[in-house]
Image (tube, rainbow, N blue to C red):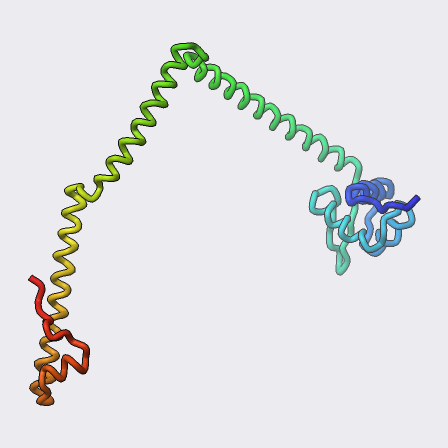
Length: 204
């Protein structure tokens, strides 16, 4: 039968067990030599597995001189487990209180909402009113362009655009006048050269 490799979690358990059994301080290189022989953990994976245990505060580490040392004591692990269990129980208690509160709220809100004939009638009436409301909104939208506020807005916009158009027309006339006086050019020549309509005039 093919031999399957160890899972990451199994490697973590075995490496932690190794440190528990030795009850000593080790450098990474020392663990990379011991772990394959004693726990069947490949040398290449020891570093990553060890770091994951350090990140989870299951293995302690400290730098002494130029070297990093690692260790894990069963007593600390037991304390950590007790603390974790206590936190879990506290969270469970909190969630139970929240559930009780929600159950009470649901019970209160359900009062008067029993599936009675009267409730069915009211819900049916509500649905009808909502449908009627949607229809009226569509009709109102159809008359949107006749809304006095909309008409006034369009009128104001029209006046603004007319003023802007007349300003540009005035500018064109000014430039044409200047060119005629400066270069003695006929107005018809200017109109043709710059595509200016012959009937260009102010908007009234």
